Image (cartoon, rainbow, N blue to C red):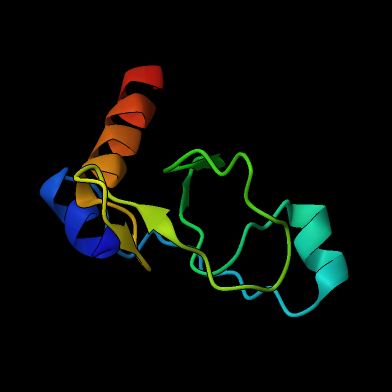
Length: 87
């Protein structure tokens, strides 16, 4: 999903850095609110406030109110637009 959104935005879909968080100490250091976490230029695609930090499965809130293991594609597009606007 992320690579497709990058490609649709005219960005390099291979520019994704995958980081494996393997322990609780690293999760705390990275402020990791669970997997998968998608950050664009260091900013989370959806506000993680209120989510626990640690090695957990992350749940995203879709724009239509449903919960999902992946963020809403519109949130990824919005994050990409914010990044493009800042550069």
